[in-house]
Image (cartoon, helix red, strand yellow):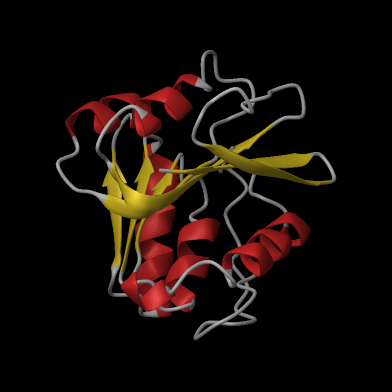
Length: 177
């Protein structure tokens, strides 16, 4: 796993073997950011990374100059890894939060310009995150929400649905508020 672009470009991120995360593949991540590069002014963007896992997506946003990155992860080992890696890289605007995403979304007072969620594919009712984000005020008007999921999910019926992209077995649904 590596950081693709920006200030920390090329830096390898080597999670310990006891991390149970399924990181977004470098191929899918690179293509995702190719899409976002044309849509996002990173320096004016507050990012929320839900189900942060290894923190890979958050590091990528921070490397590209995001104003702030909040990475939410419930697993203590993953949370500690994210904090330690951000510290080692010298990322000062990445805030790791150890919390259950579903509870965090119900109580978070902050708003974000871009929200990325990569729930474990086998997490029961993971798709509820889509409604929780889009039916709340956590995403600023004009903001973008990206939900990574398996190919058996379809969110095109939501009025906020904008587009989907597939890169191998990785699928992204994009929503605009």
